[in-house]
Image 1 (cartoon, one colour):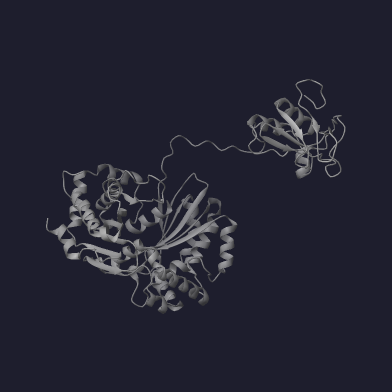
Image 2 (tube, helix red, strand yellow):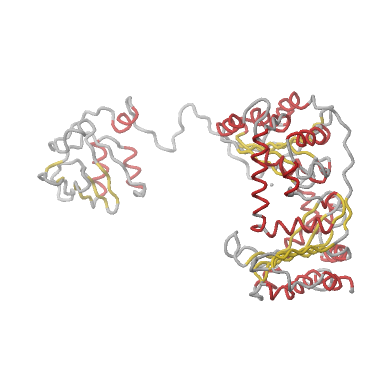
Length: 551
């Protein structure tokens, strides 16, 4: 119904403002600002009728309307929602006019906002002209196969197609802290921080602006055996992504001031290492448990920071960032397109013979650090023999870690995370002195570590060690109960990308006997132990080692 009708069901339409008499509102042209919580029915009607006359028809049919000027403008109240009314033609001159309805419209709401003439919007179920609707995805999409191309110089290009509109491209290099020498110690840590800084072709500012302009995200990480550089963005920007990625890795400028700035940040990181005891103990397990390459620290030491400079970085990159040790992997990019982009950018890298991987020998050992802390942090670990090169054992260890689980009393993953795992039920639920108790593993090409990490009060540390040893012994006794990165790292380790079905089959075929025998083999290796904090009450290495090797 229209404003001005004398029907009894019509709402009251008098408009009142401070210091003004009640009158009738001119709704020939109105701008209606709809509260976002308006009912679906009203929202539909308002979207379909946005001229003054049509809006009022829609509103008046809803009932329960009240008109007021309490907010300085004529305001319609509908239940708990309210809408401001402006006379669009004369909204700066007057708030009141006659009750006569003007049928001529100057274009309505959208004309006032955007200019031009508005037209009635079609229903939402009517296809828009010129728009092609994509076909819906089928109920089952067969996993894409990984395609691998090896360039004449040894660079591998691997990719998988994906229906997703985004793509992830990564450059992975068989290089990490195990390849460092005493002179280049800490280079991997510094290279991680120098990633995507200035190159010989673009400044750091330009690089950041180029990444941000396409909504991209770049990351870099260093590990003991591999370096990775990744770029994520919409797949339509694949050429730009690959070019920036390769430029950052191949042509770093290593500007003096940028290197010094990152070295200062590493010093701050070292100074704050006490805020990450778990990371500190993981480093300590490697230095105590291995002799050789894996014993080298991943985090740069203070002495290394004082020694590192531009020339050391340039030499380390020249010697290790070679063609046969590189894999460029992508998810969401067609393989032929990827090869056509990458080949001109990497085909000129020299084909240098791949060096032999530095050797590591697991020996076991003990690390203790007395620190000013209210808690004691303890880690017990054993070797995972063969590492990823013995796939079945590595998979069993991964399954075992998931089964044992654990966590902290206050989990960052939210209430209930991991609360039904073995270590949570058997340890954390029973011993209030223990703040954290979880299984962990770190697996490398030819070796690895598996163990338990615990955080407890100092006077309960001896009991916590007994509990950790007991859990490890019990699982060894029969009768007792992410995409482009994955592609790149698998190709580096195996020379191919194994299908998901292969790993699923391995997991499904894993039996209790497999777990028993694998854990028994691990526990036969020497114990590696690390503790930090108030370690006075931590039992001696020999007394703990006897628990495993006297059986």
